[in-house]
Amino acid sequence: MARESPGFPADEQLIAAAQDGDLDAFNQLAERYERLVYAVCFRLLGNAQRAEDVTQETFIRAYTALNQFRGGAFRAWLLRIATNQSYDLLRLERRRASDSLDALPLETEPRWTTGAPVDDPTWYAERSELGRRLESALAQLPDDQRLVVILSDIHGYPYGEIAEIAGVPAGTVKSRLSRGRARLRDVLRADADTRELLDAVIRRHSEEHDG
Amino acid sequence: MADWSQMADAELGIDGEHVSDVLLSAFINADIGDDQVVRAAGEHLARCDACRRKLHDLRAVVSLLAELPRPEPSRSFRLTPEMVPVRPLRRDPGYLRLQHVMRWAAAVAAVLLLLVFGTDIVIHRTGVPAVETVSTASQPAAMERSAKGPATGGGLDSESYSEPTAGGPAASGGGLGVGSAGAPTAVAPAAEAPAAMRGKAGNVVPESAPGAAMEPAPAGTTLQAPAGSPVPEADAALPAIAMQADPERGERVMPSIWALVEVGLALIVVWLLVISFVLPRLDPWLRSRRSG
Image 1 (tube, chains in turn orange, blue):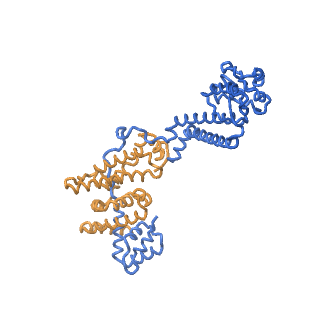
Image 2 (tube, one colour):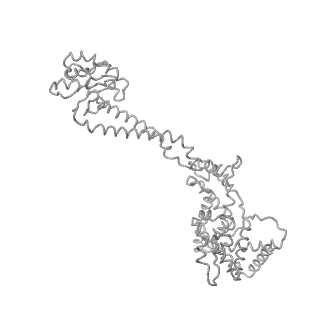
Image 3 (tube, helix red, strand yellow):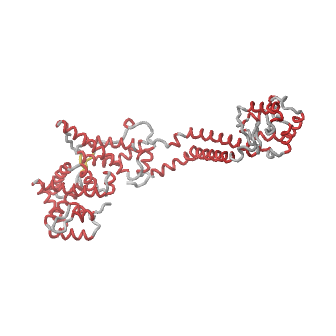
């Protein structure tokens, strides 16, 4: 992320400026990372409105704590703040939910960026449906496994960075990832319709591999 | 990095058990370092439908996860000044915040060093140890005493010296008036004679000795002074004040303590100067290093 050019200052430069109180510099960083932070928060929280609130809070916290940033990957540092904020909110909601059922979060849908258009509408529809079911299976994962699956398999981060964000050793990341994946698979397999969709996808995969 | 293969060894069944989730996961990521484990897992997968199906499922899950659409926020999260505290984010390092204090401290320490050093020279380098500490405030009194003491004590206090004193302005300059001290002492021998000829010191009042006027001292000692033995480096002799001392006492121990204090003060001065002048100049560089 640290390509240096006049129009695209490196994170480090912006951080240094922001540490000296330059809010504009910090806002450049915010624009750089807000979609990422939002996406992670959304998948952790499963709620668009809350994800926005936590994202905003994350940037405020990051700005006020910027003098504690000791170099390294800004992205990981930021996501760690976002993750902790999300966990706090989840804990709070669960405590409230156990007090009163009315307090359960209202599901809100975010806008979605869809991938490139596909030439096969049926295939696309099937995958999209399976994606939605996978999304809901993901929401059922324990928080620590969900975080690792999001960062590794949705965003494609290396173990080292995930370890930094989650604050656990890389070995723990790996075992959480394997348990998370296995659990997702079990959830998808448990439902007959979903199982069918999954089998269709796998057939398609092996055809692609063979062809 | 934790070792997949270690986990795998523990979790991969050897005799007909299935491949563990951890190993399957590692398989998908092509993240098994140990070739033996890879081979063993591969052999197992080749003959175990359940494990193979699971591996395919997991592959599908991982590829589906990668293709999930990205949720897009409906707004920007730019911070406005109202959202954030007004105070500067980074507290300046201590050496910047306390710069004023440090500069004053440096000045005070430097003055102290000069005082101590000056006093040291007066006492030791001139070969005349003193028990009386000289301070600007006590000078007139000291002058009185130097003038009257010998007069009243007379020859009884034979061991006490009374240096020719550069009176008035030079003396009031305190220990710092080093530069102005040369002239009076230079005149000392000349002024000495008439003073000594007058015999008694008692009749000389301090006010009558401005500038180079000399305080006469008891005859015995003052006559020696011009001869040069106790005050050979009279040029260094500063606004010397009346001193009384036992020449024997303290000569051995005192210099080392003085030297110690001087070195200590000098170090403090240097340290304070570095903190208050050098570090602030280096600050931008230090910061860029820290954040870089």
